[in-house]
Image 1 (cartoon, one colour):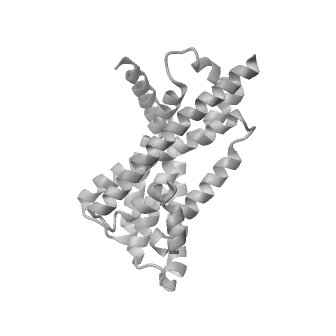
Image 2: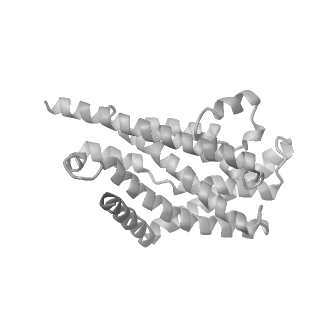
Image 3: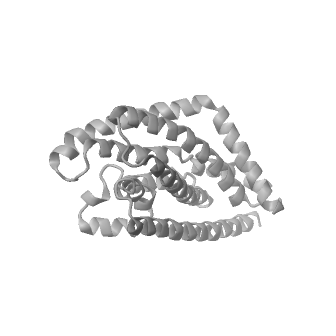
Amino acid sequence: MPEMSKYRAIFNLSFVQTIKNYKALVGLSIFLITCLIIFAHLWKITATKSGLINFDPVQLLWYIAFNEWVIISIPDIQDTMENDLRSGRLAYFIPKPISYLGATFAEALGTFCANLFWLGCVTFSFTWLQTGALPFHPLGIIPVFVFALMAGFIGILFRMLIGLSAFWLQEVDPFFWIWEKLLFMLGGLMLPMAAYPEWLQFIANLTPFPAILGQRSALAFDFNLQHIFFLTSSLIIWGILGTFCLVALYRKGLRILNMERG
């Protein structure tokens, strides 16, 4: 389809530009490794001694690595969208035969895929050197990458929703901070979901956060069909819901924008 070729071109350009910007990738790699070192020591001091979870230190480090890998790879597309609305750049997309949401998503996806590939190499290399072992069969890397991609799709969609809040707010940072804190807490960044109280697990499972982080990372240690089906279903459902909300919110924002212009 001709229209899809436009989005592919945006994706390819974003991917290539991100790869060429090696300084930013090196900075993300250093930040990722720093997070892994800090969290790994915290796990050894607290989680393993408290007996809250059954993961051994090797599994714990891999769990942290899988979480940090994806969350750091997702670009801050909400800031870009806020700038587009503030600067009036959005107005240039309205008359064009290309969707602003589609172009923005393609751009963010290109950046995310480049980050995911680069940081994936860093994550697997560093964690393997630290532990000396993989938590799964080498072929398990394939589903790990697939679910990481799917989780990234959801993360981009919801960050775009935060970016669209700029139609009504001067700054989107407060919404992003709330999203980020809920993602860390309900997504299982610090502790696997199995360590949570049952009531908190129930609440977390009503949100997209576990599918983006904890449930996806834990899949590497409990690779069974039931877990795969549940995770895949969650990601698809939240993807559909996120897309629907994104389109609805964007249309409402455009109506407000047109009314203000009179």
